Length: 346
Ligand code: SAH
Image (cartoon, rainbow, N blue to C red; front, side, top):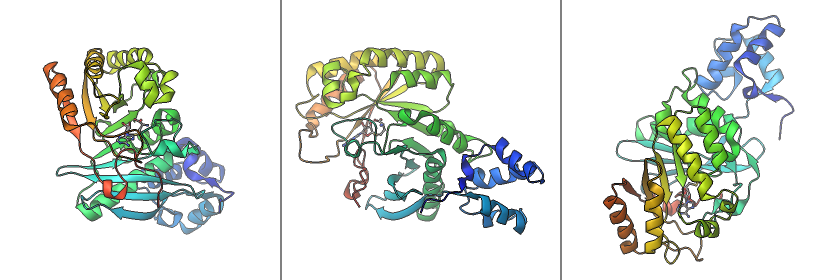
């Protein structure tokens, strides 16, 4: 049931201080509560042990903590863990813990469903139901950190916004969540360990640069030819490559941080010479690296992974032009946890 009480995590630190002053208590209680909520990620008021019983009861009477609930947890045989995350209104998103030898990465969602319409992505078929709040994004990170400690004996090391949704279509909440995750009064994680992945919303990429964010940017490119990109990502009609290019030049001029292009090579779609040449050309505009992602089929439709030779031709061409390139193997495919497979199938 949805509570009538206000979610306490919608309040800023200043508002929490005001609340305590308003009830004749000391303003610094607001700081204490803020620390419990965002530094320690607690789930209920009883855990705020430096507050009196009366104060805790008073908070309980006035507020709720709309904490996420990890409903089901699926483990892949490669160690990947997928969480079905239930939100306070009953909607569900998914988040994924991806372990490698040295790191544990959290792949988090930013929207329920997605605003965009990439034809090769399972999440796109869900349509966007709503944006996630900052606390719902933050909670996914805390939950995966706990799972990492429990199952892998080490804390979470990296975060990627590559789960469900388009983070730049939920700009304010995503940035607020990242602030809580990176701030020393929050989880204190380094922004250098965070990557935001976008399908490429030029106006918002410029805004990121203006807002002087300190995390990394990845762009799902998939084709550097305008007409082709429109066919596989129809929203690209409104967000054209020329504008994307300009926004990335703007980003680089302001941040001096290179961009990662995510790219899947599909059979008969972008596995020709002209596709490779267009990508190489696009990579010359701003310092970047290319991450070739293995395709995770979502049905038996028109999208199929290209041949190994096609991928190798891409790699050779990029290397010839000294553009760093890596291949990202799928993780958690057996539990539908790989890129583009998040669709609440459970
Ligand atoms: N909306 C954001 C983040 C979510 S998708 C974005 O588009 O970047 C994370 C990555 O998975 C993107 O690079 C996306 O293009 C890719 N992806 C989507 N569906 C996929 C699939 N079926 N197989 C492989 N990668 C996929």
